[in-house]
Amino acid sequence: MEIDLNRLNSNNKIDITGTYSIPKDYYNTSDIIDLKDIKVKGNIYLDEDENEMIDCIINGNMVIADTISLDEITYPFNIEYNDFIPETSKKSKNTLDILEFLWENIVLEVPLQFTKVEDLSKFHGDGWRLISEDSLKRENNPFSDLLKDYDKE
Image 1 (cartoon, rainbow, N blue to C red):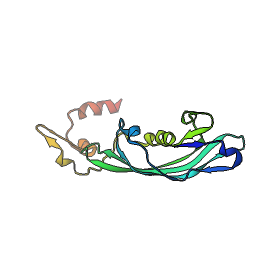
Image 2: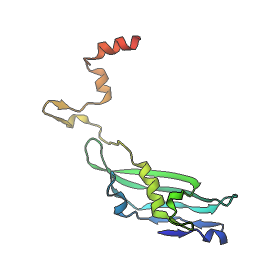
Image 3: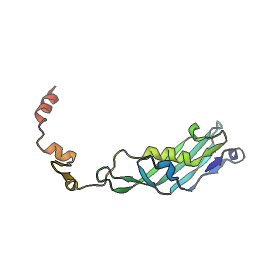
Image 4: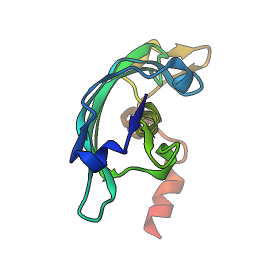
C-alpha cells in the first residue's frame, strides 16, 4: 500500500492509523511463522525544516517457534517510531510503501531466543538432559577448580 507524500503540501498531516496485513511473502524466509494484523496509530507530517517525518505506534502479535520446545507461541510487540522517513522505504520521491516500512521495523523486533518453557525436566534423551543456568552453577562442575584459579588472577 503506497501513500502519496504529495498530500503533505496541501495538508499538515497524513493519518496512517489503521490495521494492516503483512503478506506472507514478507516473512516466509524469516523466523516468523505468522504475523497477525498490525495496528498502527500515527501520522506522517512535515517538520519545521520541511523533512518528511513519521510519528507512530506499531503493535501486534507474531507467532514464532519456542527456542526450547519448538512449539508455536505468540510474541507481542510494541514499536514507537518517531523519526525521518527512511530513504529505503521510498520507492520514488513522492510515495511511501507503508507495508515495507512496517516490515522493516517489525523484523527488528524478532527475538533471537524466546521461550515459555519453565519445566526443563521434560527435555532429555539417551545420555543428555537439558539444564538451566542456575542448576549448572549448583551442580559439580569439573572445571570449577580451574575457574577458582582464574578468578584469583
